[in-house]
Length: 96
Image (cartoon, rainbow, N blue to C red; front, side):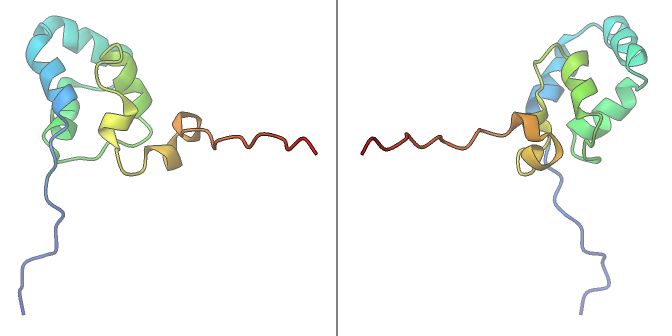
């Protein structure tokens, strides 16, 4: 029996990592400050140490859409942000 705690593997968020690499530090800091967060927190999410929550919409705005909420939470974004879910296909009305 293992004594190590069960942990999920870290999954990097590549679009956020790319934005952090390409955006000048002063600009990234200013954008984060406008939304009440920090580059350090975004890095923790980008490298998979933290999971984005409701702040995913802020991250999407900070990165000007280069990192979408779907990128941050690919498995459950529709549960958190139902407006992003694919609409159910509409059935055509039968003409009898």
